[in-house]
Image (cartoon, rainbow, N blue to C red):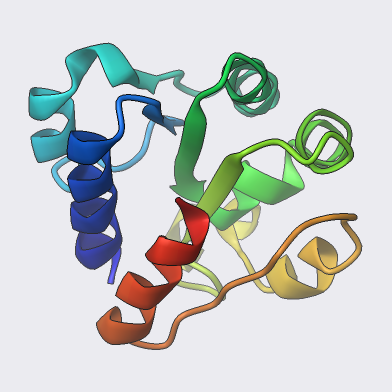
Amino acid sequence: MRNTVINKITEYAEEDKNVFFVSGDAGYGVLDEYKKCFPNRYLNLGVAEQNMISFSAGLGLAGYNVFIYNIVPFVLYRCYEQVRNDICYQRLPVTLIGIGSGVTYAPQGITHYGVEDVSIARTLPNLVILSPSDPIEAEKMCRICV
């Protein structure tokens, strides 16, 4: 599904120069085409999740439609306060793409578990939660985020 999502965002970026993609040390391989096509509208901010969210909020305030990509614990848990204050309360055009929900990344340890993602996200104001179950749903949900 993540290939479907990234491919759709890449298509949208071709049509809209305000699409900006931010990753947090994730997405190697799957983001190669986007990075090649739009090197000036992509940043990997590394292992700095709180900064990634606040930076993306700044891009949103500047008029960009921002997509943030990382595994669930690092796009929501570790930076919850920044998501709430910097993105949700301000209703900014920022989409969080969390991959690896559940125990997908369990071999990396408990910090990589993503079992409470939907319940935690439901506490955030002005946040729409989309959880596709297949590539067709993922593609349709991408349209909502642009």
